[in-house]
Amino acid sequence: AQSVSQHNHHVILSEAASLELGCNYSYGGTVNLFWYVQYPGQHLQLLLKYFSGDPLVKGIKGFEAEFIKSKFSFNLRKPSVQWSDTAEYFCAVNGDAGNMLTFGGGTRLMVKP
Amino acid sequence: DVKVTQSSRYLVKRTGEKVFLECVQDMDHENMFWYRQDPGLGLRLIYFSYDVKMKEKGDIPEGYSVSREKKERFSLILESASTNQTSMYLCASSLVRQDGYTFGSGTRLTVV
Image (cartoon, rainbow over all chains, first blue to last red; front, side, top):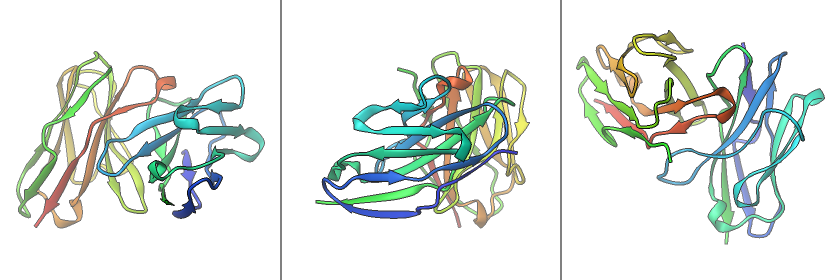
């Protein structure tokens, strides 16, 4: 079975600080990896995804993530956060067994203006 | 854009009631999913479906059932609602695994 761990449950940053949110997964085969964001009162939206090729993927709103296969990690980064990045962030994985995604527990990010 | 529409944004039901949560997608996706979202637990898969009249149990199917009579509609049924089913319920659909999901806005269900 696949599983996903997000070690940071709550993160508080000031505007312009750099962000890195950790995501580790457990699955031995080929994986697709995703980061979703949920802004307050809104539905989950796809930030970025990885399924093959360059392990450094760029998403919307200046976010990027790096797939490190040897570490089973897919950490999310942003060089300079804004107040509007305040949201909950979810990492997710699906293995080659099917289409269903397994999600991590989420990280609540608060950016102070 | 693909749209996934959940019929209710907020619901309040009594313990023991039978509850129906409806989800409709408009882009001919074959795969549909129901998750519940709870603080600190992330999203947990209840049921999913890859085709009409097909259903598979997810990680936490107890107390739930589903129905998929038409490709665009996937219903979640709480046979006898209990207070521990108070949660945010999210429906999602997808075409192929590499695309990820498109989510609905969610239904916040409170069972009293």
